[in-house]
Length: 490
Picture 1 (cartoon, rainbow, N blue to C red):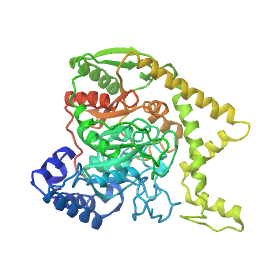
Picture 2: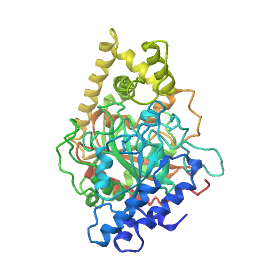
Picture 3: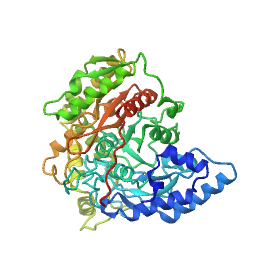
Picture 4: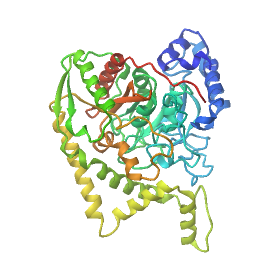
């Protein structure tokens, strides 16, 4: 692997600015790395010719003194983002060879800032999953392996392709989406940094919908600074998205080195769950010590409705999914399986086009929205969601941010939890609350467990206060000194 693959995004941009290498050379190094990493199944599609053309255009801008914020940076795009003229599948068979005639706002922002598209990244089908085993194109394999063990591990989900590609040095950074933890949990599993911004900070326009009131785009990168750089380009108000916030986009990177002196960091007691590995308990305690050494005061706080978060999430998200996915009927685009009549055509198309997990969630969602159950389930879940938001509001009157583990375990083996959906859903236990309340969160790699697998710490901030998340995340990153990377076996 070329040494050009080992740069952080920030250092690669400096190297390009100093003319240590060209955007074409940097892009070709990543394309070569992708070509040698088929085993990981991180990319569904590589756009080599387009990437090199974008790199050449970037080199020309730099030569003319017209470089933009991300000029020449090779990125991977989760296949949930529509890309003009490039196939978009959402990890599903039902979209077929759908080629959007338009660009998602987030990816369009990146290209406007000079970034280079390497290709489209694998993911759980329609972003429904916590392990990236639900893709119609096969599972993504985590580039990390446990010490002395050949078992292939999951990279987390649904943004497993994004996390695996960043960890394996197949791109400088990647776009991802987070509905219940789908950025932060895979970041924890792969030793990368993942940021879920405030709901509405990044436009959802052109992103294939899962659960519209929960979905939010964000970056996965190798460092906190890289995530800050990428998020600044991704974010911004978009009139095409009615939920997009009219809020100024600050210089997130400047916040990464901000002093934490006098800051109060909450430690929610409800996140101490039964059966949590001792290594994660220790890492959480270490994180508290690191922040104390930065001048923070640690404050015990309570989020009493946390125990209801997962049940509420797995009512609200499937309900919205069943509505959003009703459009896939075989009539307008994508796969179509003909039946004897219109009803049978719908049934066969959806039955064969959707995978098992997507069908499961559509059925759950349809059930909780049906007559006689709407009030008992969906309305009750929305009331719980309001209580969870109130819990956070009360806590943030006493502290500036919260510190928690990101996930209840390190990465597990492919196939290890496929027979128990409830066990799989528990992977999101520490992350779903931020989605339900619309708050920003960041996962920072902070340690290796006894088997040599990465573990992450999560910082949850106030709405539109990603800067504090970056400040605390940057401090954790410096204190942890996490510089491990997976040994190349693929």
